Image (cartoon, rainbow, N blue to C red; front, side, top):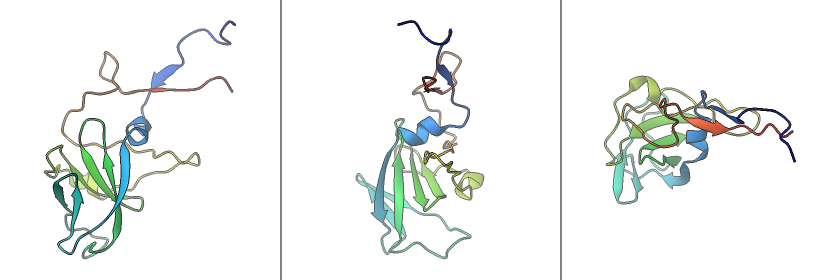
Length: 134
């Protein structure tokens, strides 16, 4: 069967959705010391303008393919960490909520200053597959 259109169905992922889709996500309860335990790491949640603390709150840990981590409380990104559990210092990122489109996929790429090396084309841009069959 011949393809309906000529050309590649792969397009650049300018939104960063692929990074959020392909990460491991698990819920955790914040401890009394305002930390989240994750695979032997103790991730300290930094001060937030939203709440004085997150003790006993349920948060979501995102474990990205490149080893970086992020903690979310609902749609809000609380902190980003390098693979060793050290905070990534990007104040703008901590206050940035996720934008969630109607399809349910998260529409916000982590912008940790650490370089990541997965799912890129030769020019260094993240790629995603776009289904054009419908």
